[in-house]
Length: 409
Image (cartoon, rainbow, N blue to C red; front, top):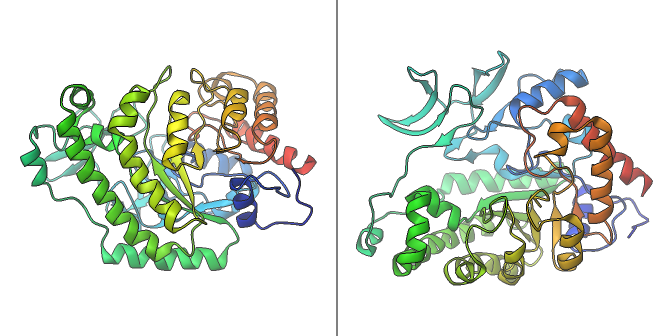
């Protein structure tokens, strides 16, 4: 499907999301926390390209994700930007910046509210007073959650006493001004990462083992929690989307539902315990803001859940983890290509990009693009984030293959 006239980036992404002809395949380079690039890999990439753009900002400290410079986004054909790369991610406010030294000795900028403390084992810890919230192991690259907030809560009466977080008026004002500025000063498609997680958020709050048991043995407790959680999500969603809805084209929800080999829970359990609370949020957007596309980030082997996700209101699926069981590109496109736009799936980051040659990477990227881009409904990106150990040459091989393809088509 080819559109003859030259499109703006925003038009290109929306056309693909609506399964309409595009002038060229849209590309995402680092536009969200599930399609980004680790700061170490990004610093090496800038150096390799000979770009002196000043110190890199980290906007997601847990994942150590770089905030890509617009010059780099344009170099790799990026058609999208994420709004929340300007304010708050994982509780850290990205307004003012300070220097921080990375593990390879290079420097970057981190928010002034990011103040990790190194313990006696050489581990960085993010703390709230004496409470350790997350930790980067001495030989690790990311901050892992260590504090389980509600692990001791076991009754519905205790759930009722929990005060749920609300987006502040200051956040709303900032996001509205930022969204308006991005909309008016760029032609990029603009996404907003809301999350709205149900299952994943529950794991974080109660612990994985505990909550898996609750799903099976205490459905009344789980439903009470999910009702409280989803109502809070919906309240925040209404406030923020009412403020920025005229400027954004994509709203990003996230809920990891799969392992490498299968869904985390059965389709029946998903339908009973999770789907109603997903649907509450996704359908609110679909019913009230039909021009904004519902994007779901869900890792893993989720093939068996996709029909229910579509029914719940999902329009765009990411990261399209093709290395998982049942997630083969041809199969996904054949079964769900008419109902879903695939955002990702363009480079196998678990195997090919890590272990294969540059030629092997290019050949596979080309093949995956030919599968997913057919009849539109595709935004190119690798599977999830570019990790710290990926060389500049491999990153360039991925994206220059995509750029070459879209010039030819």
